[in-house]
Image (cartoon, rainbow, N blue to C red; front, side, top):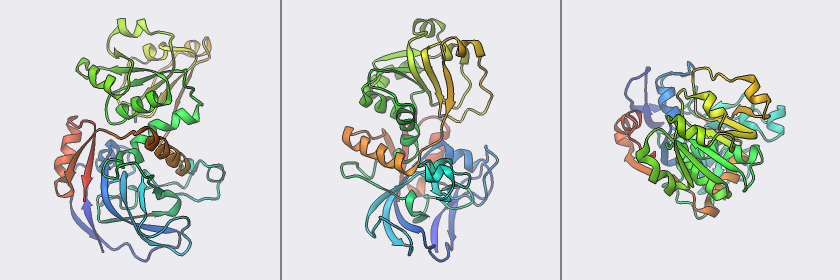
Amino acid sequence: MIKGWAAHAPKEKLEPYEYDPGELGPEEVEIAVEHCGICHSDLSIINNEWGISSYPVVPGHEVIGTVTALGAQAKGLKVGQKVGVGWGAGSCMHCNPCIGGDQNLCPENVPTIVGRHGGFAERVRVQWPWAIPIPEGLDPAEAGPLMCGGVTVYTPFEEFDIRSRDRVGVVGIGGLGHLALKFANAWGCEVTAFTSNDSKADEARSFGAHHVVNSRSDEDLQRIAGTLDLLIVTVNVSLNWRAMVNTLGPKGRLHVVGAVLKPIPVIAMELIGQQRSVSGSPNGSPIMMRRMLEFAARHNILPQTEHFPIAQVNDALAHLEAGKARYRIVLDM
């Protein structure tokens, strides 16, 4: 039996929960959870905001732990190894996206906390490619949020061939945004932080921003119009989308990684005239997660975290839901 914490209905508090995981599958890895970050997606699944939740829900998809058992067909790992787990727990490994290295885009991709139990527990199981080795030099107590939040904001830099001379903007100085600022700065880019809260300006600079603008200020947005090569939107709320698109220079890209649930209106001619793009992406493939962790270790990139013991998981979730997290929460098992 595995002991964990589960929600049994939308918007209910988590309660202690035990479940029988059955026999270890041939491609599965079992991991003893030591730390697990809390992502806003955990709240979305607990509350069934996306309509895909299956109860009881054991959340948790920013896991750091130690391999305790390997299925007969699991490859490249060993018992006792430190690994991390993110949003993905499995994929088919035979479709075109999987063969091409985009397993996170597999039509049969299995999220860690949808229809199965995640990392707010003693142990968690995933298909072996999705157990990502943690490089030396990354503090395992702090690295959990890199497994989802980190790879989500790192992926656009590789996916769109961002160069060190590029000018990158980041909308939102939160759980995703502060990591995006760190990655953009380490990438060598000129970095502009967008925040609706002027009190975060100094923190944004400490995370790597060279410039800070107020996302609600027409004057600020007009001042930087036509200057950015990439604008990463990490928030999940509606913005002044026309003004955001118009911060982009020629061939600039507005890229959404925050789960904005309302439509994003764009004016075609404002894209066509400057050959601009609007795009989005989810987390990342196993190889992207490996590369992200290697880059983070090389540049000493870790999230700013607050820690709660697992017994205080409901307090931690309330802290996040109230917008008080600075900037990622980690549960210690």
